[in-house]
Image (tube, rainbow, N blue to C red; front, side, top):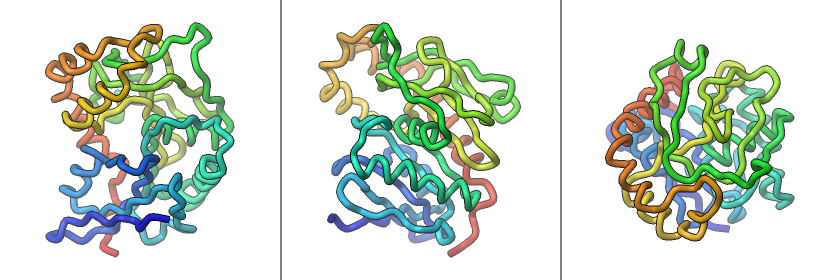
Length: 245
């Protein structure tokens, strides 16, 4: 078992946010940078490496569960335990943000299916996003977002769809007052995207995937709006959770 990590802004002292990562070298990227700037320490755990998740979020301002190469449909013990653990933020009504796999895990926990398209089409690259009425009432959304996934999710019963796409219609949702799931990736720094393009090149031949050059070209066109959205979205998810520990 590896030792958990704590990232802190020494000038501020809010409750920490639980950060759940799924690979040894994964980082919270721009989400982590923005949360630290906003004054939240980061309590980073990696269940796939044997690190336990807390029994309560009483001492946290909320949780963010990131993506990974595994599927929410996998039978690995840590995947099943992590999906079951989502009862904690839901029962305690604590802020929860699931990104890609984290959104799919939330959907599974709520009884919805996680699936790949029948024609094998994927979203790997930049794709258009359309906010729903619920989404538009909440905030301004970017028109293009970065994707890197082979599966999507059904909209859980009782959830509000916030944004939709073409290939995978359910792109962002809210369940209850404080649980959110988003399919796309706003957290990638430039270095992270370059790494994903190199390590994920074998997937660019999949149906509807974009070649690597378009990933980096698209970043120059669309990333500023995506970053601005992310900062505002994190404020929305974690609003009223700035009480000092």
